[in-house]
Image (cartoon, rainbow, N blue to C red):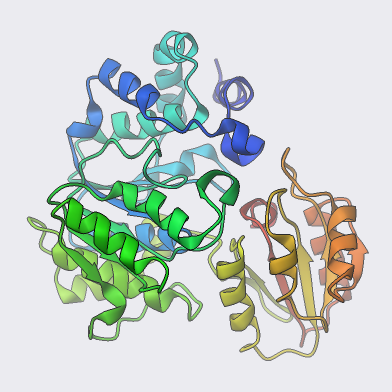
Length: 403
């Protein structure tokens, strides 16, 4: 099998939440445990930090990986979803897993995968763990895919757990309240394992405190700390809370020496050290072009607040979502005095541009429908003057088509 044939089989043969939604959510750990056992339990062969949360978990994971990389460690990084290439999910010191390793893993384990009807995510997590064990990383940063308690990554025994912001996302799977969702995220808290909570929230604080106490796990709310000010190369004021969380996490990580200088340098070299893209990323100037992968109410509201701090004559917004989002809540916060370019990201769960246009009109958001994200982007660039601002967002998959 070629690399593309391997990917085609992975995506077509097995469920993938990003493409299929709730019918791809496994909701149990039996599959990943069986697969890991078959592979020789690679997740027990390296140290790790486990990162969960609704917003900020991806940025925080990359921050941690960059700081540890600056300290001279061999650092694995598992994140999801990817923007362009599946291999972005699995990195060591910023280098993505090779095509041959992906092909080889699937060819070797395809009979087991098929026989046990493993999910796309179970297969991917196992591939990452196997790669990190084989390459003998010093530590791996493992980002939760969905939820926490029943997420396939939740078979690791981390050195520290980090939980970032909690928001209303994936409510069809995780619950309809912040407390319900927090309980799912709190499922990554392990006995006698310290946990950092990046942001103190009224509805979630009691949940995290109770679960930590039951597990005899020390807990720190990073927002309460009076730590020094640290700058980061990731643009957007909303990264400040993430920075506090990762600094507190590094502080609890035993057996790894990371100096203040290395932390500061790591926070300023995140893109160089990890290859992260899509977080308040500037794609051009005159007109200024910015994209961000924010895709739920909490994260999008932060991004919109950031947009309002920019100087521009007219605002052009290329907007595309996936089905299942709380559209009434999300669209209510978008500015009415912007020019919109409605489009559908090119995935099965993409919300049609026509449906988005109709729903947006209920909130006074006016714009035209475009046949693709790129078509909308090119039209915006054609219409915008050099003093204008172009923003692309609404979904990871919308951003993926322009970066």
